[in-house]
Image (cartoon, rainbow, N blue to C red):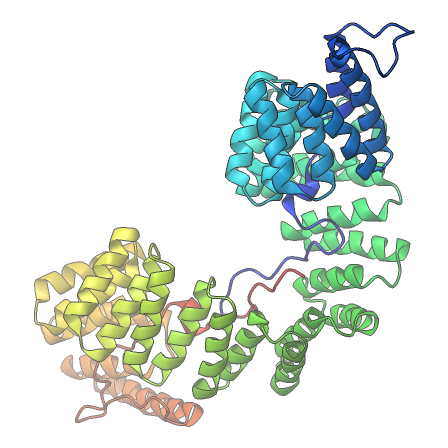
Length: 594
């Protein structure tokens, strides 16, 4: 079976939310200092009850007091003092920013945002308020607005370190590493001039010399995802040395490597972290994931069992143990483990999906349908779930039901060429050729080089007697994908019907090299050899056809009988769905983050 790449370890130890990686609020002490520099310090003998004309000076002193209270964790008192400052100087942007930071730290995001925006209304160039607003926007799941905000900060203050780092993190989250990496390099103090390998500014490997480890870790992660292997390797080594025995940093580094499919290095880091922090379920779980992806199944199973002993109510561990059982071809134990995961988490879409896959793999398509439907109910965002549900219907030649599933998917994924192709393919199965043609053409609009869609248009043209068009389309499909078996099969049949036997034989022989287990290709070779009076070859191919056809019926229980012609010939070219739909794959799908 073919699926997406195996899943990555979850962010179980490091903070999962994007904003957790962000630099904290713009330095409040700096903000207060700016305010006091603009005003004369009050005279030593002035009291707190000085006349209103001394309000700015009193406000500056109270801002210092509020900042000190906030930094000592006395947020309730800090808020009270900050509100007094706002009452004294309601048009002071720094006072509004300070109150916003305190409210933000108290978890009152809406009020904090109001104060930041009030500060910016008073002073549109207040970079600290703008940077704080950017952090809040990112933390409240408004990344596009956060990007715009941090970009504004850097236009006003190009050297603003926190905005530099935060914008780099946001670009990386978008997958825009071309923009992210220069910002993260600048924030982390890494030199990478003229294409030379990135390196910290100093050879000293201490954390202080190389900059904050979280910055270096973020940059290493960006290098990994951008495919800059040498830069990543150098920085990963630096981070690992600088981290020493810091389990959190080592674990986070392991997660970054695993996310980039560097499972061997990730497993080594998780093992090291496990030695530093033994009996931690999250570490054992992620160690198991890395080992599983290395096909070290026995070791992975031990890690997951250890995690399960420590966290017996974690459904993800049983999901993973089910994947191991499935990889060992232990179908019933795998299903039992996924059922256990579902008892702990009934809305576990991936567990439902894997049960369906296991049933489908063992020719139990009717039973699989229920679990595919459950997977879609719990997570309608996965295109693969719809594709595989439609395939379950397709296997039973329930083309109407299959097309209905793919039309549901088209509403969810309107730009998907593959879904449009599958709609057309199901319509072809129903014999609705006009509907099929329309869907295949939509697929080609989205993906002009879609060989499947071109080949199917060629098949329909051939069925309608449009031989010249069919010939052109089928040859174009083969040009797009020289290993496209159905296009070879249908082109050979077309040439056979046109009595171009030598050409047909050449095409069928190329098709046979692509798929010698299909009974149909042997029947077609029997026919063309018969026309060419090659009796021995014809008899051989007929015998192969009969043997393979009987084996197919036995293995499938004749669940999908091929409509025979007078001599047992398959009535049409074999309907072969794409690998993602047929389940012709060996790896399980991506699993959930924990």
